[in-house]
Length: 419
Length: 115
Image (cartoon, rainbow over all chains, first blue to last red; front, side, top):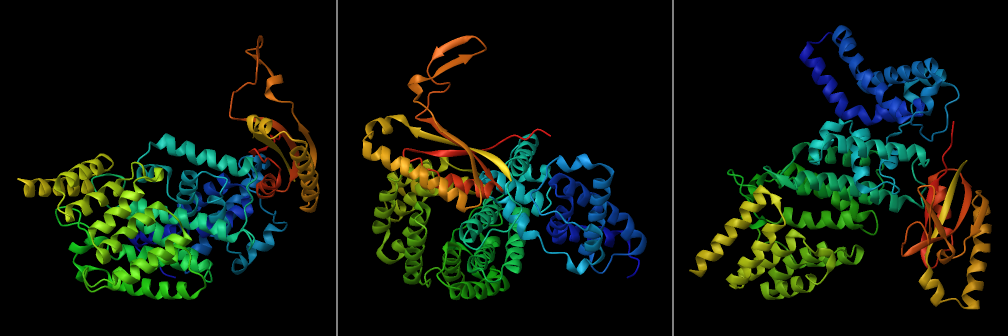
């Protein structure tokens, strides 16, 4: 251990915040038996770290240092004021001998999975699951979460408080689900992480297409889940899906912010390391048993990532993967995406027929990519008037500036051809 | 252990349309089976009651305004309840899933504990 400059300490704390928050909070929650108290103590521990680490240097194991500090604060608070225990209690088995457990840091059980499964409990609304995961597992502030989801801070604060109160009020157990419950419960967790990624990947509104921090948090979470559940094929599949999708993120927009479709993207700029890691993971996930929806989506992303060009993409294999995904997960959005390989193999008229059938599905009402897909197939068929109409409909359903610019550009192209 | 109220909401119209002795017997059997299943889970039914239909309900609002009918007109009306003791929400939801409600569903509400 050696003395470091202030900037290094600040970096070490930022790093420990990102890497260790979930571990420290989960370990503290076990002692505090109370979410709010645990959160306060962990925040205090990070504040103490700034002073202590500046003085004596950054410890070899920042997570263990922070955990010990936060747990001491929790125990002090509990001794000082027993009534704190009833604030927002967590349903955990009480630790009978706190002192004994504190003496041996190596034996601290890893409670991060309990924390994740509690935040993503199906008795909580999806938006509450997302907010709680960012708050408790990632340690984001309410202000940051509100910013990421474009809601006001009081709204987000109320959402988080309501969810925490339900956990203690309805006695949502702070535990990892039993093996028979795991498939459903795990799917809820993976859905939350995927939702974080997609929200960051295509911000629903605003000037930039990608919200970097949400994307990074989602990938961090997927990595953490895989480290904690290495045998779950779908966890592997989710991380693969995020890495493979993200490997192409930088080429989705032109320097002027214009949206670029897959056939226009510069494949030389795709992140080859991320693709290699994603491919390894997807192969592992496919071998882990009957592939689930995240693994199949990752396999689809892998086919695109491996293709040397748009024209040389293995559309036959993609169609097979989409069929497998549809039977596993009958979502109209998947059925819509399936129209892309149909168009490549059987032509735009066949794809248009698929899309027109889907337009009858009420679940896709107002779905912006339905009108956009229809417009694209009509454009390729040279049915310019109808294409313009469909592009205009798509335009009504998106607030994202890059997407709006793209659609407006297409309308102008179609109109030019007409005149 | 904690207490939860399982509120059974069912469509009274669907009940009326299917009010045969056979259906009635099936439902009675289902509730008896439910009681056994709850014990097998290690949980406990504290009490349970079926209610007469909402056509017999009278509401009192603001302390003195008496009106005929249930407090809220809904497609599915409260038709009965169980007060159960369960170890956590997961177990209470497991009980909720077992609870017979063939013309509707159930709501699981934790009982308030005053310290």
